[in-house]
Image 1 (cartoon, chains in turn green, yellow):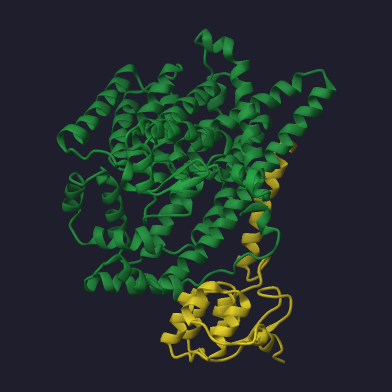
Image 2: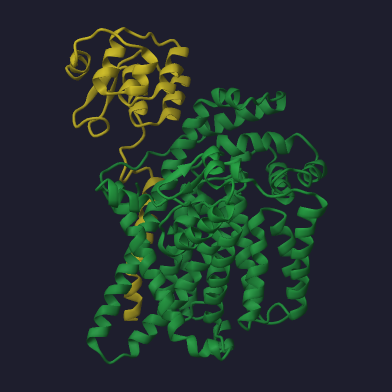
Length: 476
Length: 142
């Protein structure tokens, strides 16, 4: 299929958009049922609403450990736009973000044929169902900064894989600046752009790439030399290692002299987590349960099956395309796979001090796009094979792969409904939480608390929780 | 076209979810037991916000209510909100109910011991009870 063919929508394109609409409706329905959470949201709203937008952003340039001024600006802007209807605006914003992300996924994958549609459906299940995605929809602060970065990552790839134009260079630079100053993982925008360029994508020109590289240098200089923001230290929070989570004191005791061992562990386990769904946040929980507790519930087996098969398909794709890659001949699908490889390595590298599922969400979304195009390629290859045995094996693998990712997608929907219940219950005990946190809200803060509590408990009561033994097949 | 079938599991899940969403929006409650019908039932379903809402709307924090079968046990239960909180070991809800006027009977600590509710037991303190009597008393309610 030529580039111009790819630009021309077919009935499979429209069918893909219709299908994706149903997926977004399902997620959004459950997402809209989650109230604004207590932890990481109420306190943030009080902090964001207490100062002018300018003062808020200025203060964030002088914070310790983190440099996220645009995240706070983002919270403040939506807060102001809401006109007091916080539930509708913050939840609506989150739903809007999921919709935009899904549209960008389709723009990148460009489904134009029946095989591409099949690949897209499996890829979309992976996008929603992968464990790294959970933290972007089950939580919000009350803007989910990680979700913002995912959209920026897909936007960067979309810019890079498009037709060359000067405005793409400008957009890429602006996008990088916004993302990098929202959350640290925004630096991955530069990785997406550079990887796409190295794989032959020219949507963003050499000058555009040079500008982004300069901005990366500027960011590092600003963060470490000018503002001296630094990075979170080893002893700042507990972290997974081996079969357990180590408390900051334990981390300091075990790795204080040789932190590089711990950092290497984090980088390695981050890569494995995306590719195999084990370990999670540095902890080999499923392995431990299998080896020492003689118990293995169904969800981790499904997760492992989906990820191992998906990763094998990606390895097969790379092996099949190796000759062209060595000759520096890349198709659009190759470029998506190349971006995934670059992002997983860079994402793991920036997780060196601390790893958890949601931090790896950029690698997770590019895993989904790479899987979509690799599955399409596998189906097309299988379609031209003469051997019935090969077709039978291939069909079995693809049905199991599709089924496992679909099961993971069910799991995330169950988790969304359960999260709605958990968050609502937190609002019952908000006064205890406020006292524990040592927060002393002013009159506006108290009014905000009353309003959010009423939203969570009275105005938007919980929809009934899903019950039944079958729930445990999909969710621990 | 046959390639389309390979994506069937994912497509079926999406269609199933769409049916679920439509059914709920039309007032049905597929795959759920519907909303809680009493304060004890809300607590038993771990819908503490639902319990708080019912109390806010005027429900009595001392009244015995029905917990439908399939929520805590296979049989229907008649329990007070405090008993429901003990049976699911929800100590924060215990405090919430007490703060709203629920009286704590002596047998509640025995029920916590019988139900194996460790945090509720710690919260309510030790009592001298015949093992199992308090739980049997709750289960035997007509």
